[in-house]
Length: 364
Ligand code: ATP
Ligand code: MG
Image (cartoon, rainbow, N blue to C red; front, top):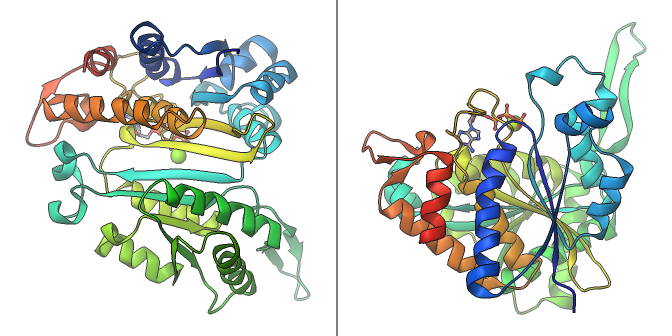
């Protein structure tokens, strides 16, 4: 049988720097664990524009569709700010998400003990935190029609967006949340505003339907998204998996992310429908951007990208044990005090470079 395939799109700025550390770990799995991946690399974002005049060629798009998993670094940078919207680096990433139909965006918020002091919240609130936010990524108010800025009847203008969800869109993202919950704490909290929004009423009914008909074993609760935001900051450990729409998920996942400290620590996965292989279409990427202010200086924290690869092991390749191995290595290295610049708090630590951090994690 062919090895599982990974397409690496390192992108721009610190993307290639953090991806270099992931490649060390992929190499380690081949050498030490006999788990070999067929790795292909290609260009995306500004680096693709520089060569091809487009942030994502059709050829690269086809490779992404065919790969078992795509690992992406980051795209964009000040050099490309002047470009026309249609060829901006970010368009490459948007095209990938859209054509792969990646409707379920997974953002874990996990607090490593060694960094518990780093959160803006009290240590007891965040220590040991491990929650997952599932955000619907392809529909809702960011895409609903009608949209636009139109003249109104009084000679002024009106800006219009439409929040719109169908039964199918809600059910498929709900299923992905319930599937996840079964592999974790078996608990889902669904968040919407059913008190003031029609789409919220439908959301609540459909999530409940999927629960009752397909996942009655998983504990389900519902919360208004504003109350959810409050609870997320008050006592986040009450949650396991949170499932919510595109807009609320955008806000809630950023909020949850900051419970844990640095942007340099946060992985993500975007999943689509299962393919013939039984694996979902999948793209893994750190939450952070291309960080042009620190690019090329060996300062970037590679952990977000490394933990994104761990998510690929777990969700694309069913290698949960190996994923935990990577996460434990990260935990151990942090516990030993190794810190990239972004993690250097008042309590200090052992300063390491991007490559230094990657090497320590491989050793661990
Ligand atoms: P984008 O628009 O692509 O999301 P952004 O402008 O929101 O990008 P980032 O590129 O993520 O933001 O950078 C925000 C800040 O966080 C910058 O100061 C950057 O240096 C820092 N940062 C981001 N990622 C890392 C990382 N992996 N390690 C260290 N610092 C980082
Ligand atoms: Mg940003």
